[in-house]
Image 1 (cartoon, rainbow, N blue to C red):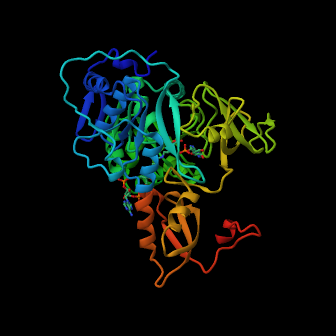
Image 2 (cartoon, rainbow, N blue to C red):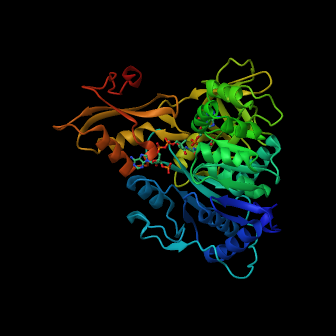
Image 3 (cartoon, helix red, strand yellow):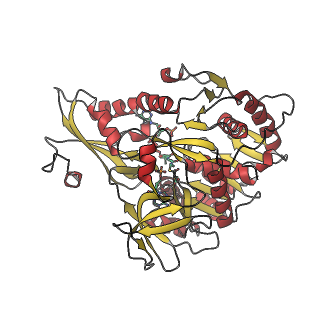
Length: 476
Ligand code: MCA
Ligand code: AMP
């Protein structure tokens, strides 16, 4: 079956809506097929992934052409953008018509996405399911982000498994305001509805009001990260219209980070709805989900999807057969939803994989009926903030480039809204020392706004062990 079967038999049903602009499946097919013809021969393309209709058309065109697409966060700072472009080396960058691109992209030929197309160009032959479809950049604890190469087969298998888990059909209307350069917003949130022939109403950017408006209208499902549900819980407690809209939804689905038991309960109390959680990673796509008919237990991400093989292993790599809701093991996954490898990084791919199993680095317990409860990550240097994963090392390197920073350690500290917030512990140099605002802007300039420290502590020295490694636990 084709990755997007509906392009071969389009209907007049609404496909996607961004604000006032929307396209039917027929219209999407016409513009995407025309654009796909212009991409033929390209080895790889970058897509300037603003939350707009043009991004959606560009993505569908690249998939139709069988050309791997690299969605780029338009808010990346210079350092990260240079890395993504140098590493992925795209032949073209696709943008909406009136975008001004930053310096690091000027050398890449640009193609403007045109929503007017004449004629009805044929859809190209379906590419090999094993061929790469997307390259999505994800942060590790150290070094620059790695490009995760995802084949068409993984996207199709994951969306189908989620559709089965949630009874997700062409009759559903999905609403969300997630960014379109990560798995959550792009693969689940955009390609999901398009593969299933259902509609997506994208909010442009997340807001409580927009979410409530859509759920009071035709939307049946909501996707969001826990920070969004935290804000919705607060609003629903104050405003009966928000509570009523959330209460009407067929499914409220949360992922990318742990939804706190407290926020889960607040939403139940205000709206009567139990949020459904699911768990996954860029490399494996979504691997566990609470089923639409299943018990929605706070703090759990449900059992593995039907397509996914999942096991827990102990510190020695021995498989844990036990399911007592107590014994902790690292999650390893295998099956058709897995990535092909990291772009240009066979070393990192080899480290992450063994015998066909992917080491997630996430640790969990398993209940007798197979529900997983995420306990934490092996790597404490991976900060989870607003559903984004942020490597502490990357921010430390950026801060050390500031002349006013002699030494620095970055940690993730608990935050009621973001889950964790980025905190920098700085030994300052220079007189006067740099202000917290200066350091924040410095990070935003090199990396992306969501990686900026939300708090800067000035300390006379950093606690270190005999090896000179910072003892981060002592900072807190
Ligand atoms: C703020 N902004 C700035 C600055 N400060 N811009 C320039 N310089 C600054 N100093 C901008 C931000 O870019 C943002 O714009 C706006 O101002 C508000 O910023 P911020 O405070 O950072 O936003 P927030 O309120 O903290 O955002 C919360 C959020 C966001 C909306 C929940 O964190 C978010 O969208 N999270 C989703 C992350 C996600 O999709 N993760 C999935 C990956 P603007 O609002 O326009 O951006 S994980 C995944 O895919 C796996 C597989 C999975 O399981 O799902
Ligand atoms: P990423 O590295 O951006 O692909 O994000 C994947 C990570 O997000 C996983 O390794 C988990 O640590 C985390 N994650 C995703 N979904 C959940 C969830 N429902 N609960 C807790 N953590 C989650």
